Image (cartoon, rainbow, N blue to C red; front, side):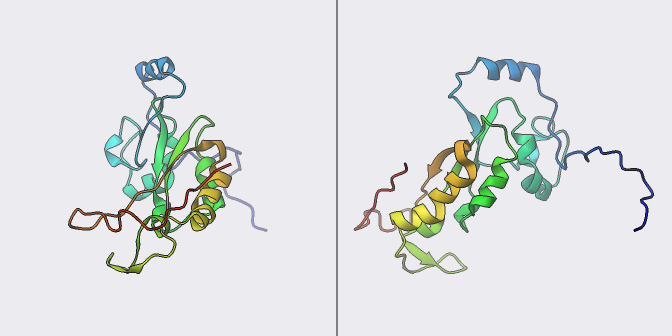
Length: 186
């Protein structure tokens, strides 16, 4: 085995995205808010927050991959939207990886996969091709969304969002489905 040229100091490398220093006035405001009131945004990777949330400017890709931990250090931002699973369902392990990056009192607002919220199955261009047999069906919603989100996020799961697709003409596609199953969580 080759010896290292540099001694191992045991220090961990700095985070890829560093949080901006907290503003004492924002900490004071956050402490005065009711415990159940949460402010947040739909995403954690906005480059325009340099100096407010991020210590400095970072590339979009760095914020997307590594910005959540810094975002969660902001005194007022106690929740964030997680919509990555809209396009492809996330596993419990993927949800758990997000949960590990935030404090215990942080919450996620999670968007359900389109495979259970879209009345149509779509091709790569987004054009609806045929009816979706899993549209608003409780079984697939529980299996592909609710159960993995609960298992991975646990107490950090704030709200589940079932966003409906709308047609380009502004009319709802299949607004009143013939069957709507109620998803019950225990």
